[in-house]
Length: 148
Image (cartoon, rainbow, N blue to C red; front, side, top):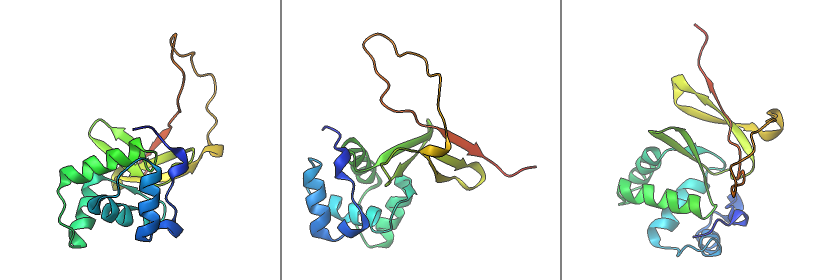
């Protein structure tokens, strides 16, 4: 699947027909589970959510869906450009419904991700990429904790 950055789902598109159109536009078949998970994801505005938290929301909404299906769907949405994966470390990934260019604070004590506008961080003096490669994007995650 190719990334489709024009496939953002906004709050006005959270009715089922709007979500269905957006999924099709991103090259995804609008299955019942994708539609239901997309509605849960995008009906609450921009947010950061883990697969486990979305799975819990789905169960609380009486959706019969496995954690594996939630993971697969989130990764498909990410590949299609509907979400942005924010890898905190090798064991923790959040999925961001805001796909615009921006950075993040990670509040360690709360396991919470907060947006930082791209204009607030100036990334300069990047190394040249290896031959045949180009820089796709620069993600900055600033880790925070309470002062001791």
